[in-house]
Amino acid sequence: MSANDVPLTRRARRRRPRSRATFTSVLGELLLTAGVLVGLFVVWQMWVGDIIISAQKNAEGAAISEEWAQLPPPEPPPVITEGEGEEAVTYYEPPILPHPDNAEVFARMHIPRFGDDYNQAIAGGTTRSGTLDHIGIGLYTQSKMPGEVGNFAMAGHRTTWGFPFNKVDKLKLNDAIVVETPEGWYTYRFRTLEYVHPSEVDVLLDVPQVPGAIDGERYITLTACSPLYSLAERIIAYGVFEGFQPRSEGEPDSLAHVEVATPSW
Amino acid sequence: MYAAIWRILPGPWWVRLFLVLVVVAAILYGLFFYVFPWVAPIITPDEVDLG
Image (cartoon, rainbow over all chains, first blue to last red; front, side):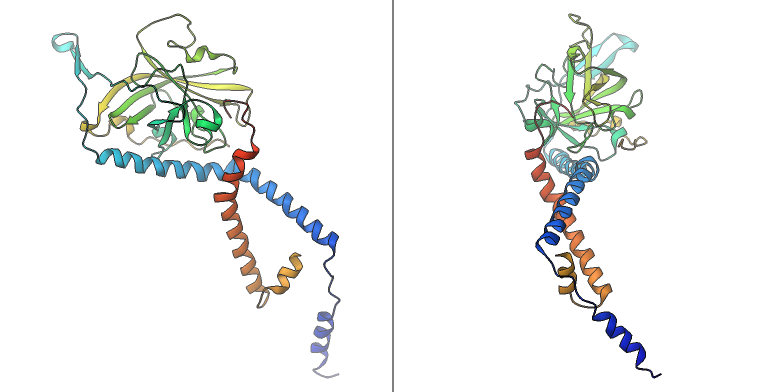
């Protein structure tokens, strides 16, 4: 017995015949790879992609908000006084923007409950290829504009494509829903959720769910899919208008930090 | 095929493993940031307004 024994066994192991790549083995490996790719696509579409896309869109939004902040502030709108004496209340008449064209971005959405950096584009139209998939939040064609009497109604994805309305079910009473334009900030306050079938379009009426009614109120309506990953129902979030803050007065208090909701998967 | 790639990679097994992990990470990055966002609109149907 000598010290050579150990190296010999090692050499013997290394001499084990190598399996040669055959047509079928390569085909098999390619098919396995294709399977893994499809699996990864699902992981991306249902999870990783939403995180990436929403972060990218929030960053784009932050840059646009910053750009608007650098512009010379536009002339504030007229102040309206209601009531007399000590009961008098004054507020800015909210400027009403023209209705945007399809896929035309006209405002940014801030919802502190969805995140301090939540800053998503709002554009005209609610087609998936035009607005919802690639831009973000879409304005229904019959919708009123922010600050206008009637219903300012939008649609957004609850899952996939950067899921702008993913956390819509996490809104709490009085949460701020703030729409930013170069003119300033329109603040709405969340009131309630409703779950409806996709055909129940009365949620978009000027007074939601009350056909023919006129009450002079300014509503906001956010619509998204429900339950998660399903098209069976719609989740509707309603809010009411609180006020407009012109850019010359700086960011409104409604953008203050609140406890941020966790995403729904 | 993958066995051949493993044999072509230089160095001891832990260097090869490291290289494989780097390549896999690079591929995942390319897929998640470029390939899938490009493919998704092509393969998803546009028949509903919301998702």
